[in-house]
Length: 349
Image 1 (cartoon, rainbow, N blue to C red):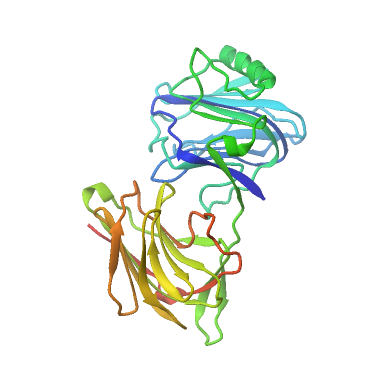
Image 2: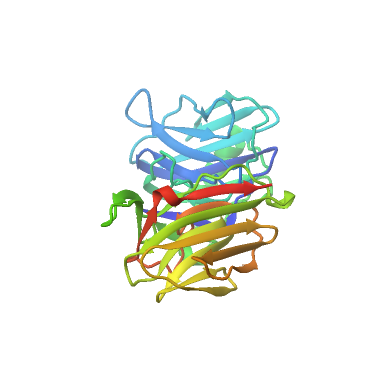
């Protein structure tokens, strides 16, 4: 399954926003997921109660959970599907072609609409039960801070259907996010990614209960709430073994815009960021990894070696075993075993 990821963090605006897309769905699934950094939204399709189509919903971190109208998006037909969220009035306007419905919710939302980078066609959090979108997508637009009316959506639907690739303007406002099938993805602020392989439980040849991570698979680590700006430091420790000679990412800390990784390359463990790579020492068989991240840096140590640190200031501290934000250096033949009983995390306030 392929999906599209934005290069930048999505910022819909605190007061409200509007989302629109031209789609021809084959099945239910995620249209846009920006969850992360303690906020974000989900816009998706689910099976319609009446059958014969799909129902859109949006998740805004409110007591209502999935906010859902009675509208139906048809299978295998091009449809204009849109929402307008008004976080002051506490309403969501849903639009499907020439039909619309307003659904109330408890406002304001409990968390910020600003989350992380956006996944179009796939969930943002691996543990989520959301499925990937199956179908065609011609265009998607997000208008940050702009609360479009039903009449505005009618005009936008016409503009999207007629667009040759240029972003449409509504009320003289250009979309903050614009994706079009009329232009190569390389010319737009997005990247195409593949659904990562799943991490799985297994037993090593010495009887150790393990998490097996292959290729670009990953598994999130539960971490208590923390605030880097307040000086909180996140600690992680675990025992690992790399069973292949290929390069392998053991763990990732930070966020999508600023991740740091502990990797093994040519038998040498390294602490890496976009700008820096520090050698932690050679590894063989089972070895211990310890990481701490906070106060403007991330540090790591392997076994009883010297701790190395590099400047690192992500907006949030997320931790993954494996590569939490797969990038071009991931090796499909990598195989890592993580001793499940050894994984420990804590937050130092």
